[in-house]
Image: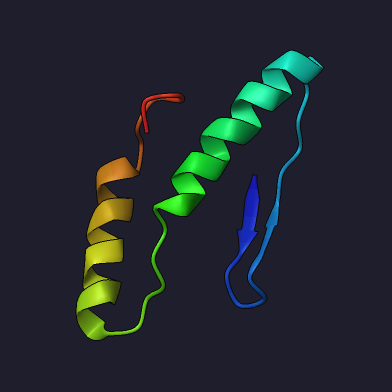
Length: 62
């Protein structure tokens, strides 16, 4: 996955079955529903803390 924050684009390359893709897509959409825009300095700091907590996490544990 590659994220281009300046242009608000996410590229995802998938290798797997349709069934795996459907489950992954559902999980991703559920996470997307929890996303919030960064509007304030406090939002920005909270986002950085979240990224720092996830940095280096094992795959599927983030």
